[in-house]
Image (cartoon, rainbow, N blue to C red):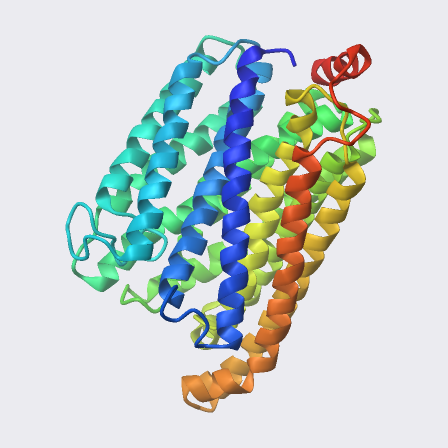
Length: 461
């Protein structure tokens, strides 16, 4: 390890993986509630489980991004993180806020209280005191990483990463604006949700993926940076006005149907560019890096992001199609594969790459790590197909034939059973991943001189 402050990333990654385990477990519980609607009704109502599932997803992904930033910025800027103390304070604020959210949701505390009670906006249900804490933590983080970069070397990777991190932090401020007009509320709500996952998060994804390609393939930095700028330009060009595909049916003017259709159709381009970028870099690469698992996760991230966010997003983004499909299980199919491919796999890729260096060992348990990739990815792909078929039938019966919602749910019950089976595979894969990166092989009890030398050589590369 070149820089001592890279150890900060370890704490963030461990916390993120703990929340990852919670998130997928809650997803599995919700999957069974779809099969048996009375399961845990009194203890854990579906709406509370869903809030915990989606909120823990967002928080652990953000923690992964923060950990990735604390890991790669010292190497890119060629200096230590500005203040390790601030980094750990930031993490403590996030942990405290997460605990507060869980307790508030589970026990329905302070219902209706302006400051302490939960809000009713999807993904942004956090009480205002938690939102305020998130803003404080974000400001600490932005100050810390910006000072690190300003005092050090500037690269395309650090510039794009900071642009994405500043963007997602500033856009979160719209979470405090909650107008009484529902159409206006949704319009600004998408400023956070859409412009996070289809604009600023894409910048973070592209920069982390570029860092991994630089380290794993050995391709010249100039080549990687050219690709990076092209991907980022297409992501922002398509993603910002692509927000319009959420404005079709919420009471906004009709011209959004055309703006949303045209620009969201172009959102396939940056994801295709990232997939092509990853495979071309590996093809051109001169380095036979020992961490094959990290390379697998990086390639899997780019590929599944293209299909989940790109192809499955395009399937129902045109407004004449979306008129029938919005809010069906087709949306759920797209959402699951897009989040898994673009951001879950990205975090697991950087964790797989960084952990051997942070722990001073060779890449270990790679077979188990790669097995977890195929188990999780296979489960998620199967889940996507089952939800797509369920959504197609739901669209026809409910939106075309006009059947009642619950009658339709009874008729697609078998798809929920299959979805639950795929969820079991995802949870087992997630637990296997955590075991593979956290638990050393038996023959390696303490890193000896050889292991340390190899780890230092990997970090130097």
